[in-house]
Image (cartoon, rainbow, N blue to C red; front, top):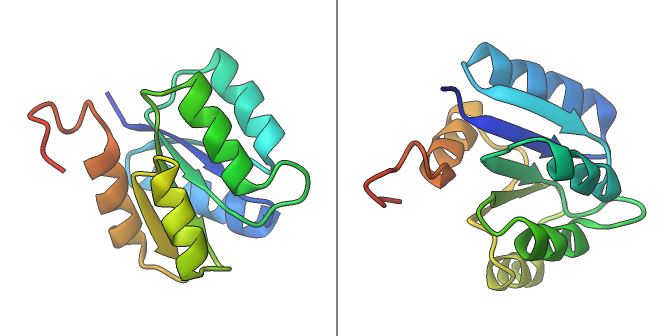
Length: 127
């Protein structure tokens, strides 16, 4: 079964393109444009990995990450942002993010991290 990925990013052009590229690489990908929509989606759809932007209007990425960890502890979260800083990286990892990547990043790198984060891909527990 393909890895199920939810991409959360308020840059709609990036979001649409990224979801399409993940789908073309064999992942089951869906995208939403904000944190509240991500939580709504997760409430009714099984997801293995969330790729989450930090800077978004409304519910920002860190608050969304807190809620995902609280409501869906089995879902892994990879923070992917164009507004990277050591502070956000540290906070994101302390809140339980699997990884923290700064745009631009190669698609192969993101897919590798998604596969490593997916519990079904790593039944042996390797990261």
